[in-house]
Amino acid sequence: MTKPHYLTAEGLERLKKELSRLTSVEREAAARAIAEAREKGDLSENAEYDAAKDAQGMLEMRIAKLQNLIANARVIDESKLNTEVIQILNTVRIKNVDNKSIMEVTLVGESEANLEEKRLAVSSPIGRGLLGKKKGEIAKVETPSGMVAFEILDISI
Image (cartoon, rainbow, N blue to C red; front, side, top):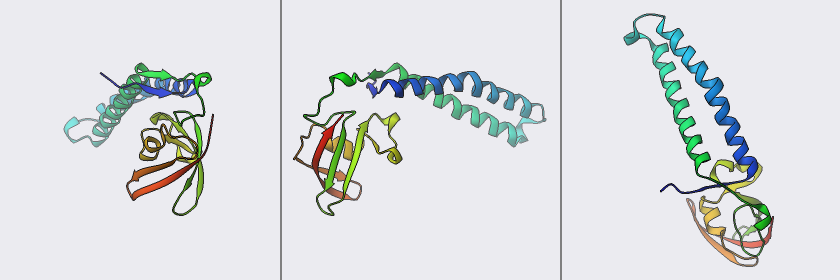
């Protein structure tokens, strides 16, 4: 059984738009590139043909991944979120206990994660470590650089 993929309504719409663009525009462009390369002669020595076939393969993998994500999507009803314990779509202010730095992140599904926008995947080490914690608790998180303790300062929606 495939695990559900949690996202916002906007995130699901973004995935659907990308899938539509890939299947209607990019797929045709890949087929044209292969046809053009095929016309250039011997396929066994045609690097352009090989590159076009590789690009098509990567495109088809991305399409399959998006189809899987959309098929297993579970849109989160933001009206049912609370701020008692940390859960997906909560914005959390945390303080690194060791260096006292404070950061604010929003926990999201993997496909919506973006560190520049301070959107952290719930499946990341820090995301997993924060889930279920309450304001005032210390979350001890195993990161690639070792154990880090975060104090939960605030939970919001």
